[in-house]
Amino acid sequence: MKKTVDKRVKRTKKAFQCTLLALLKEKCFEDITITEIVKKADYNRGTFYIHYEQKEDLLQEMMDEKLDELRFAFRKPYQHLTDEVNIRELSTTCLFDHFLINRDFYQTMLSSRVSINFQEEMVRSLEKHFKEDIDFTSNHVPNDINLKLFYHYRVYGIIGLIIEWIRSDFQHSKSYMAEQVVKIATFHTKKVSIKSN
Image 1 (cartoon, rainbow, N blue to C red):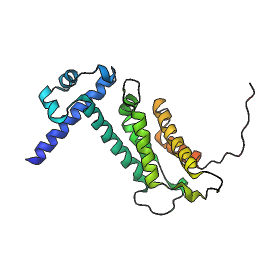
Image 2: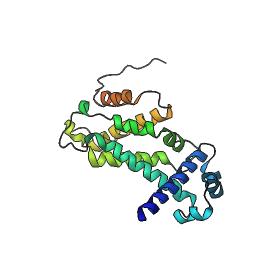
Image 3: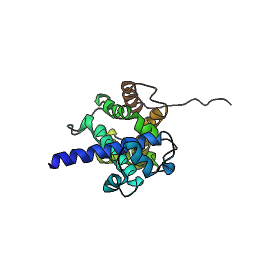
Image 4: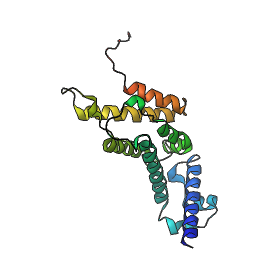
């Protein structure tokens, strides 16, 4: 009996999440009402209030679930590995796969229609995973380089690359992006040319 109730709860919550995402494609979060959500999801207000106090709770739950999935995708390539790993042998395809599978969610949530800064939450989440799991100091970073700044440079570079890929409507394939991350991460810039004005 409990399994049936759990399945029903999951199905109901999923319906509310899908409805909210669909509405966010059309209008700003502030303009969406609970009445609209329940009507479009084909439930009543009472059912909504069993699970959520306000629409912000629904939005937060939707974001939290997706960020949990993101954590799983981030850790998948190395979850059974220990010690040092050659970056060239580490595939990040499942990470890009996650964004591709959830393209509607990320494109909508990174749009101006969502007042909550989801990009900041996403960055914080990825930064946390990097901090917990990846030690860039194994690269034998010279003593005159500030490790904290080096770490932020690496982490935010990868995050920026992912956000740009989402915003460009996934212009490149996931395998191309995974390959580029490795190439960019292992490339050392020795000199640059100054453009003439």
